[in-house]
Image 1 (cartoon, one colour):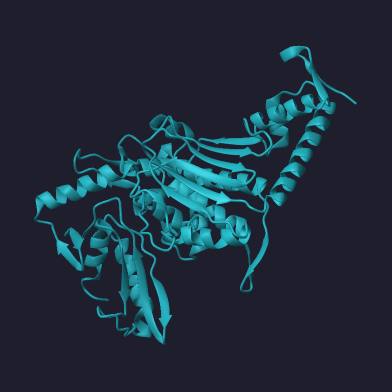
Image 2: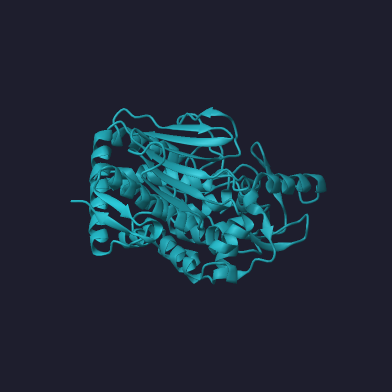
Length: 438
């Protein structure tokens, strides 16, 4: 591997990211890497990227081997980092095709730190947060997800503290001199009370609004960490939207999951958490739309063919990629366009960049959605009636716990509907009971 390869990695991390191709000359000629050396070079990249004496702070990289006309190319995508990195004690920055050592240029280094810290709220340091403020079971879950993506993932052999540092979730503030875990660490691993103490406004609203358009048919008010938030949002989608059989090559894939893993990933990863605007995922009869506060880089509808992806929270984005929750930056939008046109023939998703980032997924084939929603509604109301037959004093909270997959607000909606249809009535007020009307 070229001696200056990590100078380019460092410069990419410090500037706008970049692509490193080993085995390709600067004029585009493909020479390839000697096949017997491929694994050694990959090991070299991974080891040095996680070695704080080489690259500081460490940054996990994922080299890939590409076969091109009989030659082996090693490809490394290096995203923009939200931190300032140095290699062998020197800070490099990127300008056009050059990597420049700016270690002796105090003004340039200061501007680099200021640009990183003012752009990314995920880097905000909380010096009094410690490991006891994180959910210990999430570390095992994250290692399992990372292992599913790569059997020899380095996180498997790291302690919890080492994992957090490797993922860029612990840093030093060169302005204040403070060290500590970042807002990104708290959002990914924090206990709920810790998250609410640093971000009291933090929540993501999942809403089903098909029959009761004035309020909602079902709702999940999510105020937990981002890892579990992703799981709950995907569960909400799977509960209320049908899936379609689709085979890509010899493999059956879930169109619904392929589309909405990207929508939900974008909703959580690229949100500006310093703003109190709540993120929303809303399922309606003819569309699903998501919105979150954004730090825009441009405005208007995004063209999937001609757009330059910009990471809003690079540390969180990189973390989600490591656990297989999102694709490479930029490819998710293209995949959403690809699979949406199959899921709802003729549908064209919209990604709208502004202070509020909006994603709209049309549901043109809504007859299946309506049919499934009607079936779910009938099933829930039937279960409620049977539960009230057994115990007429059951509260909304107890009904929600018994039904498991519905919130108290959802139970209230179905109770109101049953009352309007003349199937039940309330006798005796708040301390009374329900009467089943035959």
